[in-house]
Image (tube, rainbow, N blue to C red; front, top):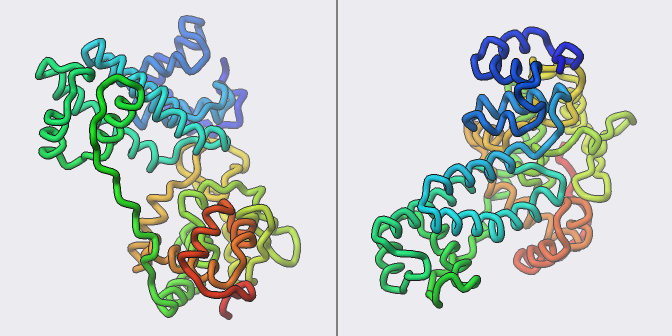
Length: 364
């Protein structure tokens, strides 16, 4: 194994070689003491530095490409389960394998995407709430099969994070690990919060004219404010979804390319030609919004934070744009151009009401 054969920045390699866990792992791989695969890194403490190291080796084509955060989440569950009583740990493994993991696969892996950072952190938090519940049960000598309504209600009444526990209990009931138990069903989120049209256009003008704002923040923000893109989806876009070779810039959010207004297109061209943010490898990244971690895109949390600092409210601003598009365009067109499901577009149109006419143009 030779990192020198990979298109790496030598300074990054030197910096990483000075780290003890990196030196030991690389030496083991080079001498044959450790296999040159992900199992060698699995033995290290799974922390952000290890994640960066793993992505660095993937980017250098030393290790095969995998969905890093999903892999790390699976390792995390296995490590936590090993600290529990054996029957309890087995329940946690089954819950993760047969309930949590299939849902993550449908949302991410089956679409050839890794978990977002937000999803990774969220899943760890939910699993931690389940582990606290199982540990509480173990401390009282109770197995999952012993759980009754009174015990469940007693626990739920004394904790703040209830939904993950109730989710686990519903799964346990469905799989016959416990008897029939009643749980609360989380109320649907109100998706109809809005800002005014004047506020929406003020925010759009701010990003169109804000030369002191980072280009990636301006581009991702305009994608959200003009084309109702979810920030998590926007930051995971690849460069091949943008065509800036002609007189106009087009972007494929869904199936049909969208022709950008000249002012928006100019900002996108500038973003595409900007110097890379990374220092760990040569060449061009495939991500439209490249992150600082090897092989990873920028996080939606960073864009959301920067927009919030500018006085823009991402969630409600996107809701407003989605409502406006749903009122002015047929739901099939919204689904095709914006990149959402037909059912979602139909449901949004029925909630928004109104009639459709032409595409909303970018105000000059």
